[in-house]
Structure formats: C-alpha cells, structure tokens
Image (cartoon, rainbow, N blue to C red; front, side):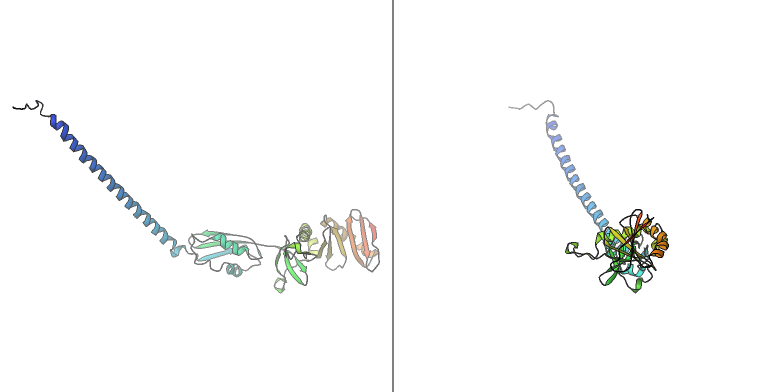
Length: 288
C-alpha cells in the first residue's frame, strides 16, 4: 500500500538543516574566542617582560650612577671630612640609592646638627650640612670639651680649636649613677646656655666673660677677663646684673681693693666680700 508524502516539501528542511548550521557557528566562535584570549595573554606577557627588562637596563645604566657630590653649609668640618663620612656613595644608582641611610651616617658626626640630601639628575647628589655651634669649653675632670647650646659634647678641645675664643664652663660634670653615664649634667648645661645666650644681645659683654660656673643651679657665677672677682648673677636677669657690676666696679674697687665676690641677686642690694679667710660680706646700696 502506498504511503502519501507530505504536500509541503519544506517540512523536513525546516526541522533539520537550520539545526546543523547553528551548531557549526557556535563551535567556530568558541574556538576563535580562545585563540584571541591566548594571543592577548602572550602579548601581555611579552610587553611585561619587555618593560621589566627595560627598567632593569635603565636602572643599571652608567648614566644614572652618582658621579658628583656637592657639599655646602660646612664651616668647621672640611669638605674632605664630609666626603669621608659618605665613602661608598659614589657609583651608587641615583634612583635606588637610600639617601636617608646616608644622611644617618652624616648625623653620626658630633659636629653635624642636621643634614639634608637631594638627587640632581643625571648624576649629582647635593649635601647640605648644619653644624653644631659651640657655646663654651667645658672643664670636666682633667679634660676640656667643646659644648654646644644643648649641653652636648661636640669634641675634645685641643690645639686644632685654638682659634675659638670661648669661655670656660665649670660645674658641668654629671654627679651620680642615675645620669646613665652622661658626661654632662643637663640642667647645669642648660643654665650655662641661658647665661651665654642672654649675653649675646650685648656682644661687648659676652666677649668680656672668661669663665662661667654653674655648680649651683640657682646661682651662676661669672669671671671677667682681667678681673679675679666672682660675679654672682643668680639664675635670671644676667645681662642687667652683669652690667650693674661693671657700672659699680670703679666705686667698689675704691672701697674694697681686693674683692672675693660680688653678689647681685638681691634687687637694690649688692653684697661685696673682700678676700681673706673669715671676712664677712659687706652690703653696698645702689645696685640693681
């Protein structure tokens, strides 16, 4: 018996042919996507490696080596002494060198209060030094030391500092074990610093001071050049009291030729003690 065929001959094509065509296209796009991803990954890797090698070559280039070091701000330290503290900096890479570590080496010098360093491409490092300023020569035990405004020891005093016209400071030695091995008693150093700093407002007065004794924290004692009198100025009003002594000294010397000390700590009263054992201080009116 014969089987009748469908009248619409597009029936089978409509259900079979389009299905095969969509499957081929999907697989093609999927393969193409993976290929693009792989090529992109390879390209990124090549660019990254090239950049890494470029940076590596640039950092190792001789053009970036430190070839020159300039020094400024130094007075007591010579340029050679500064450069000796930076031995090994020349030849370092300008980009990678740790300037802060080299600055710390400069700060190890007792003369250096502060320092700054900066890069100046292509191969220069500028060094700026700020030195400590000695205020006096501290007499500690049997030795003499240059002392700065903070009471810190700069260096041992010797012939190489003979050009410094500074007063001798007595009474600075640390006294007990609780000072943690410090050479200088900080409160007494601070008193000496206050005295000498105050006198700087009148340089002519400052230049006349030969010695400062800060053994007593409440009473600084001054000795002037060419005068053996101990001038007791207390712990404040140093300029006014020293000037008062200089104004009175002709009259004082006339009354008491050989003076042991003059005490100026008591407003309008001035006490003068003649030299000689057992002699009492005399009160003189008219001081400040």
